[in-house]
Length: 221
Image (cartoon, rainbow, N blue to C red; front, side):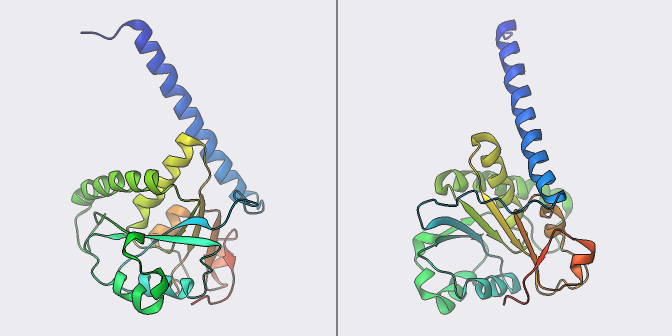
């Protein structure tokens, strides 16, 4: 049965409004980054702790993230963690470095978006599965802050967080910390998130020449 013309009109209007909302959101984020505006203080004055979602990647990314978390104050930032379902080491590393953060209820797994050596075609399918899982987690956890440092898992998490912000108009502050090993260029994840991150932090001052909206705070690890 064909949809009535009134139903098609409403659907068209709803889709148009959604597209306009997404474009306005994207322009406002990118414009803020391009014009050197001060970082958003979206949750200034809010009740603490802020719900903070941290993405862990196996291997070096997790070790670098633990360096960032070593002094994090849980009275200000209440951390939950997302990791890939094939990651068997990150939870143990967190438990060894910060036992106070190692409560099982804080850890949430999603399908890995891409394995090393996986073809780009099959990666598109696995990334879509990961994105659907991340959408459910972001909806349930409703983070106020997203802290990421580059593992492939963070792409669907960041996409889900941004979609949540577009649809509900509820701010999520994105903090991206580039990998310590990135001395002269950004990672693929960094290049994707540089235009929209609220704070983009690098470890090496030479990167500021190519990416002037990044922030150099010294070596944080």
